[in-house]
Structure formats: structure tokens, C-alpha cells
Length: 602
Image (cartoon, rainbow, N blue to C red; front, side, top):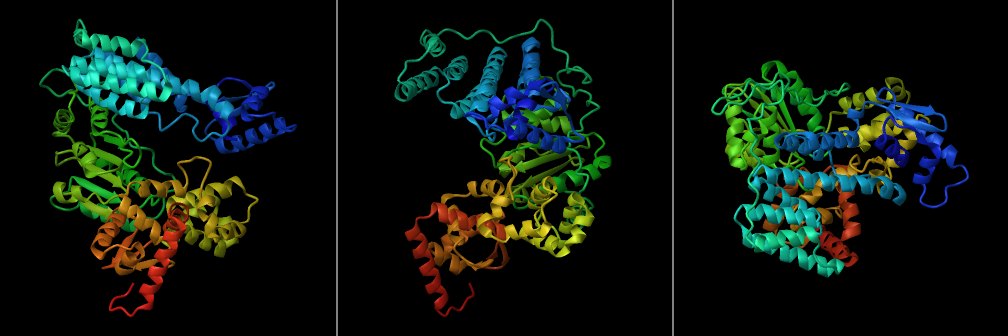
């Protein structure tokens, strides 16, 4: 079904013959009932898209009738196409917006090599071409420092791309850093020789000769007259702040079936009533607890208190690579009416200009999915009338200590609220028909909003499934995490937990895996140290790291609890990543620890 959906979406508003869908959906010869299978997939897609788009039959094919602006691939292509006709400073903004739509490789979670070759390769090439175009525009504008920073990140992802390396060499040369430019050439030449057995191509060779010859870079682009900012922003005059655009309303939409969180909302409101009012609130909690949903809901309630608008950014702090503060600042400054040509190159200068733009205004800034305090700090407003709301898996203690932020912890839903969320999705009648199964399902999901919504989505897609029977599947911990997943790789509890696990140091990650061998929900620091075969002080540090990303919670000093889904995930990691001999030895140490009389519990 994902293959059929991918083809229809990538060619929105175009009729796709059934034969083409069949050719792309199967790598080998299609089955005899291929047409029937495609028809069934289309039928299910119609149900999923009801109210959002129309999936219509046209002759011997199907067409997805939808607003092209709602399809990322079309928006990407339109922005890139528009950038080619725009002035350089406008083109940079459009290309950044286009590239910001990407969240990974094209069609990464679509099965089948044929469809990925047919559609995915072309999209990947278009992305790289857009990267090259953005680099060329930045070079033209003389923004060498910014270009060097971005190219270094891009080349880390694609170290064999000669054109990107050539751009980096030219940017370094223009910055007076010829030695670094030559070093990048020699490293690229070695990689090409060792990995592909080839010599550098024309782009890289020409850049090399230009650096050796000391050719001066072309003068930065200078328009005949200063560019006017796009409407409705007033033109920028040096030394004066432009008028605020009337439509800075970047908050994501509210969740229509939001429920619960009365305690957290009350705590948040109390912080706003404090004198002096804090300028930063951190919502911290484990993956899947609904931090973003709560933050968005609260931010919408506060819009009247911040009449000058709301800024929003997903910092992608636990993804690779995370969003850079400089990129977010550039986006915010554009929204605030600063022309592209007036945005400084350095993060420090951008942050200073950003704070100046917010001075005297009452704005709310929502920073979602922050990774570290350092990533977030340049984005915090300094004006008393503004408020930053930050969500993170970490506690971001640096913001609390150095920046006066207040911390609100977001945990699982209350049992009644979790049942209400499930009922909102599935209908109260289905819940009341098997209340015991619904209550068991809520607990199997750990009362986590993400797990509950995944469960509800699967049950909605299969109305014939009994609530009780499907809940019993979750009782088998070997398949519990697998059942709480969808075909979208990002929407699964296992993938969600992995983001937190991946952020750990090697020592804390090892301890987390070994804790999967501990059978209970609570573990003491001494038991954890014994299990890991490490001293108590080192174990305390690793336990603190696990608590910081909310994989554990210290309920009583020295005693830690974890959610059942977290325990299951740790056990699976231990089974797959720890050698059998190491696991057996760790369990023996733990059993001997419990067999000995101790003055402490655990």
C-alpha cells in the first residue's frame, strides 16, 4: 500500500494507469491477482484520506486529487523552480525552505527496489542539485562563512560528491583559507581513489587549479538597487526595525481531540502568574509523552497575551543532524521582516539582531524537540514581554541554571484521560462494549499518548478486530513493541525510544541494556552497579544520564523505576547487542547480590 500511495502522491493530480502501479509495486513478476491487490490498496487509501484528499478512478487508472501545496515533493519542486527565477537573496530563502522539507532519504520506508529506483533516485538527485544551487547563491552573495559551515555538514553526509567539495574549496579560497581548500581536495582525491578507483572529475580539478593559481573569487553579487522586502514586510532601513509582518502565526494547529493534562496546564499557568514572570518554560519528558501536543495546546491558549505573534521551530535535537541554531535564527529573522541580505553570517550576530527585533514586542516562541541547552540558548528572547516554550526529552538543566528557565515534567496520562483519548479516537461505544479490555490496553500502552494513538490508528484501520483480542497480543512482550508501530518508520514506540537511547554515552547505553536483564520495575543503585560490574559512583553518573533523558525516574533517592515499555526495549537491546556470555555473567552477579544480606534495598 505504501508503494501505491508513494506513486500517487509523487504525481498528485495526474492519472496513473493501473499497469504502471503494478509495474512499480512488484520487483519480480506480479501475481495473477495484482489488479485486485492494487484495488484493495486504493480502497484502504481512500478510507485513510477521507476528508483530506480525493482518490478518484479515471478510466484504467487512479488520480489523487489534492492541493499540490499539501504535497511535500510538489512544494519542493515548485520552490526550487521559483528560486531559479528569483534574485539571489530571495532564491536562498526559497531553497532553504525547499530543503527544509526533507526529513531523510526519499521513499526510505517504501518497500521495493523498483519504485525507489524509478522515483527515489530522481528525488535524491533533485535534492543534491538544490544543495548545489543554494551553495552557488551563497557564494555569489559573498556569504563565505555561512557556506563553509553548511558545506562541511553536507559533505559529511555525502563525502564522495565532487561538486559539493569543489564549492567548499572555492568558499575557503574566497575566505583566504587556501591551505584548508587544498587539504579538502587531497582528502577527496584519496577517497575517490580508495573507494571508487577513479581520479577527480572536472569540477574538483578546476577548483584545485583555481586555488593553486591564486585566482581571486568573483566579487560578491551586488544589486543595482537595494532589494525590497517581500510584502507585507516594510522595506528595511539600516538602523531601524522594519514593521512587523501581520501574519506571524507559525504555531502548528491544535489537536482537536486534546484531553487531560489539567495538572500540567495549571502548573504552567501558575508560572506565568509569577512576578517576575519567567521568560522560558521547559517541558521535559520521555519520548511519546505528548510534550509537543501539550506545548502547542498551551501556546494557542496564550495567543491573546502575545499579540505580536508566535514563532515556531522544530529543532530536531535528537535526529542526525539536528537543526542548527543559525539556520533557525535566519528563518526567524526573515519572518520578522529582516531582508535576506541584511542577515549576518555568524550565529552570535544573528542572535543579537534577533533579540533586537523582539525588543518591545510581546511574542511567543515555541522551540520543539530541543537537544541541548547550547542549541536552544541563542533562540531565547531577552525581552520581558516575550516567552519561550521549549520541549525536550532532556531536562535542559543548563537553561534552568544559567537562563532562569522553569522546568515542568510531562509524564504519562492519568488513567481516566488515557481512556478518554482512546474513546475519542475509537468511539465511546466501542470502549464501553469492552471496558476491561480498554483499561488493559491503556496500561499496555503505558498511558503514553503516542502509544495510545498508534493503537487507536491500528484498531480504526481494522474495525473487525476485537479490542480484547488485540490487547491480548500486547501481553506478549516479544511482540508488544512491534504491535505498537505503523508502516511509517517514525511512528513507532521502538523508533521513539531509540532516539533517546542513541543520545546516551557508551557507558550509559551499556548500563541501559544490562538493566533489561533486571526483571522488576524498580532497581537500586547497588543492584545496577553489580549488574554492570562497575563501581557505584560511575553507575550513579550513568543512572543520572538515563534519568536526564527520562528512560528512568528516581522516585526515592538511590532507587529508580522505568516504564514497562522501556524495560521491554532494554531487554530486546540486551538480547541483540550484548554477548550471551556477558549477559549470563551479569545475571549471576545480580543473583549473588540479591542472595547476600545488605543494609540497603535494591
